[in-house]
Length: 327
Image 1 (cartoon, rainbow, N blue to C red):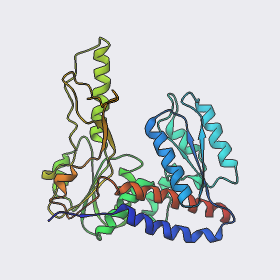
Image 2: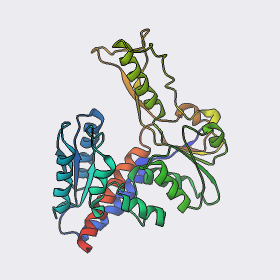
Image 3: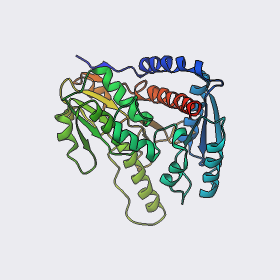
Image 4: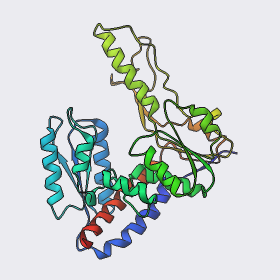
């Protein structure tokens, strides 16, 4: 029997409804400021989506466009300016950053009370100490993944595997699952991922593995085109989490977002579309079509973690606005 789908849109609407009830105590709409210092297409799309979600939920949204040539000093000055602006409820920093910009330094410069994404060292430290989603500002994607897991059932005493150890998804998701009394294993590139996953009641996949493989190949291919090194072999761009790695009835949460070519031509380059541009597609970390036949619950390719991540960003912004009122 195919797995039941975990509907991120439905859970997001419940979270947003609860968040909107808190607006009554505020004199003005919460305001989110996003600082962007790049010309990355993915970041541009994300900023547009943020603006739409804020507008739909009666929040103010400001995109501070610094440009891809912005210096560390200019980014720091923007952060400090928004820290001091009493009309700003919450701040986030878009990635990627320009060269010679230290992400950790810049994130740490954000007022932790205005940290929209829960990535400030102070807030990550609170999550380590508290371990609960409702008691700390939590990275939005990690919170979303664990919230969807909770829709599938309780996890006390059960085995969970988090595939990926990033500071914004894998590690905070691990802490949240520990707060739910799950037995948690973190798997990564040095792990027996298949072996760990086959024993798991819950899998949260957050690696971007096929996207990373494509980026490595593309860099080597460009180097070869420019006369350096040997021509690389075509990469394995298949999903990391395959059917044979999943226990029957397990819950599978796919957090991965990978941009890869639909296919490679005989020369090893992406097949182009009718407009002569590389034909790319976005895929997750999980082989959805195969895994859904054995899993108990699974997130769909669209409408899973993404909508709920946006809802947590709105919740964090509203919570930040309340902290400003109460401080």
